[in-house]
Length: 234
Ligand code: 5RP
Picture 1 (cartoon, rainbow, N blue to C red):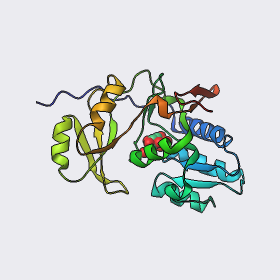
Picture 2: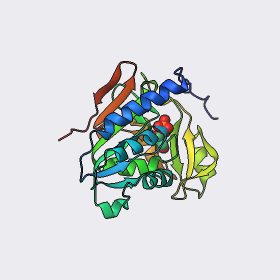
Picture 3: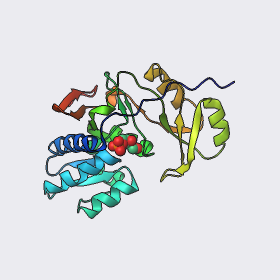
Picture 4: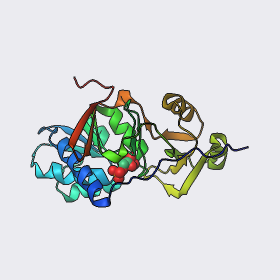
């Protein structure tokens, strides 16, 4: 029998205007970390929507960027940023992306926009991975949902194996996977991460371990707070 659903993450109490301001503040701080000539990984989402113009405004002539979604690719190109296929880029100096949740140990939940697999590939390829967020994304403990990308073949069986997961209205990723959410309790994120990774049919999950994360920039009323992740900046 399916277990009862775990307590889901509570909605933010920030006003929309304030949340947007904080996202923009974090995005602008991250854009300052970019140096001309760098290979830059561009994340996906509304926080990254503030990052793209902030990068473009710096007028760095020799940036080459890899996008984590078609939406980011289109927006970046419209701003005149140079987009290159990730494999052609041959690596990433700095990747910058948002997050849905950030816990005190620098574990992330990502994938609210369904781009988790490409986002994880780009983050893993990056020498430095910078997370940008408004302060409402900082949580004391991770909570469901945890986004998933699933192989279409046998997806009902995969959902049954996972026990507490639901498809998001047949939303398909640009790579043909189906986007779903794991709705059970997160508990120890490392244990859940291992369990999700070991489930046949799961292409990727939205738990990002601290060792992938270099820096977290969280913006709030007091300015932009910088937290170190588990990946050294060297
Ligand atoms: C998209 C993501 C986003 O980074 C995450 O959902 C945060 O989005 P937003 O910046 O819109 O709050 O992982 O797949």
